Amino acid sequence: MEIIIQPTADDASMIAARHVARLVRDKPHAVLGLATGSTPLPMYRELVRMHKEQGLDFSGVTTFNLDEYVGLPPEHPASYHAFMWENFFGQINVQRERVHIPDGLSSHIPAFCRKYEEAIVATGGIDLQVLGIGSDGHIGFNEPSSSLASRTRIKTLTAETRRDNAQAFGDADKVPFHVVTMGVGTIMDARHVIILAFGDKKAEAIAGAVEGPITAMNPASILQMHPVATCIIDEGAATKLARTEYYRWVYDRKPDWQKL
Image (tube, rainbow, N blue to C red; front, side):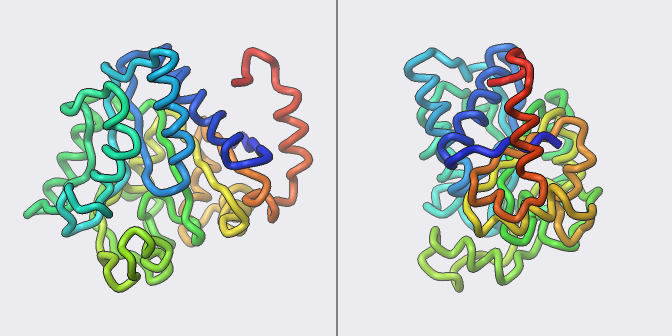
């Protein structure tokens, strides 16, 4: 796993955006796996800027989102459908038919989850998966104790995750208990994974994911086994890492052709 520590969340997000942009330019029909929440917002803003000012073309790109709440209609302001169209899709030239977000209103969720997996495979697989990380180490909505080989399925949120997500709903009691989420195994199938984390609230989870044992108690730790995983974090999220100086030394000495 490559660890990139930047002074601020914005600095880290610029690097993540350049990874996405390079892929889209090199492979116009790329398949992107995308995350929601506050963490990827600066990255999405930079990609929107690149689209508007530099002509970054998303017309051939296919996207798959990690997750969605069960029971929320797409037009609900706290749904991830609404989040993605407001903050990213609605500001670029992605084709609506190429956008895939889990259906939280499906009448048969297991069947929907199988079809979601099949749709990913039919596109040739995800080229680049963007992830955030929960304060308990969850990726997607794969909470601690999730199978590290899991596929897209329904999951029950922990009380901690419901509290963390309460802002979008105005009250933790209004946060749904269930979600549809890509599984850890689904995430691991992506050719390249970028995990973003900002602020000291994420420091313990990042330390466990990067330097701790591989364990279902910190689902993000499985990324240590991914062949191309990039962890891009700010100073706050790096505070509990033991080898920060080594990570900085390595990044500073990368060949110019590797840097973005």
